[in-house]
Amino acid sequence: MMITNQKRMAAQILSRKEGRQVGVHRVWIHPDYLDEVSSAVQKDDIRELIEEGLIRAKPIKGTSRVRARKAAAQRSKGRRKGHGSRKGSANSRNPKKQRWMSLIRAQRRELKELRSSGTLTPSQYRYYYRKSKGGSYRSIAHMRSNMELDEISLGGDE
Image (cartoon, rainbow, N blue to C red):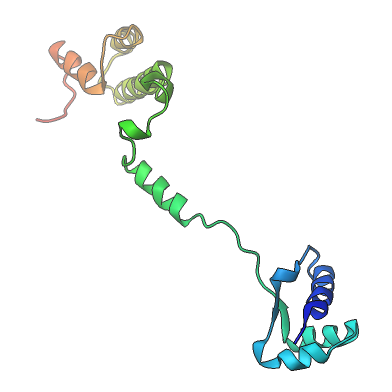
């Protein structure tokens, strides 16, 4: 039983109905009513069958993002970042400027908190600000340990 013409007509009708192209391969015909569909010769007959639900347009298949999302989640945890996955130098992957910016911002944030809490006087704040700007401290912990050496009580682990 040939239903090539019926599929072609259904594709045309469904394209107009959906507002975007429906190809012949996206036309689904109910397998129990194939003889009824093959007897439909005119477009009106096909329209009726579409309204009855015997002919439908299959949904468009997209590319699944499940695997990509799973890989991205793993990368955020630090997986999949070994030597085999790398392209580009260490500096291109995490530039020196970026490293410096995150370090200096963290140190300045800490200094501002210490000044606002009254732990540092404005002159001490200015002194440590200049030192951190000069790159004297590797980290916040390093900066705090230097402050403790200068006998500034930070009230950390007492």
